[in-house]
Image (cartoon, rainbow, N blue to C red; front, top):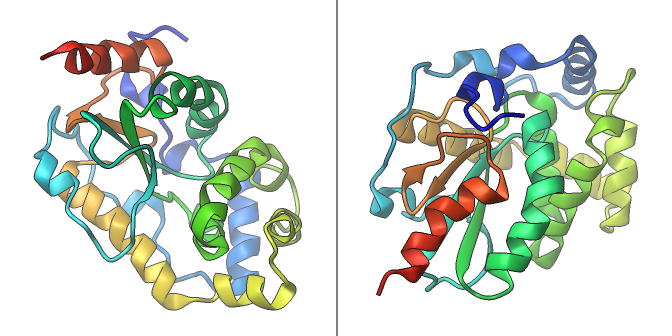
Length: 235
């Protein structure tokens, strides 16, 4: 994929969901009652700002950030992602591992993952990762992206497939059902998405900010390095 592609071609929105995913979302909503979550089409459209205030971007909210790397790093990268987004899956599986080795493991960059679900199914996956808790949350996000094709884009009810993944993180049927019917958690996830949309102009995924500056091209390691390295090299 060329790096000068438009954002519409390198990000996911509600219109890009496949028919199979839509059927899966309907099945999930019918199974666990997540009908209160609004579809991605409810988002405010338009191009978001090229830069947002860092203080506002980093302001603590009700839903705690999922972070990797030191809090005092010179560079903070914030990703808004949907668990059912194919472009987010590509970033998580093909870019983030090398990004972690180059910048996070060396304590140069702090990485923040924020959920921006485009549908019920993505919201459910995000909730499960949150319910896993502590040091299990990010690994579960990684597994969900790795196995995205199995649960997000297969035919039939996605709930049993999500449960198979959740069991690996220690979920029982009881804790699984309790998590997916937690209205407070669903409201928090929805609130984070709404805030990102209305405050920072996020309306597709992945949307990535580097010290408040929006990445305007395909999220490759090279594209991120072009934004990060000058900041790290500056005295």
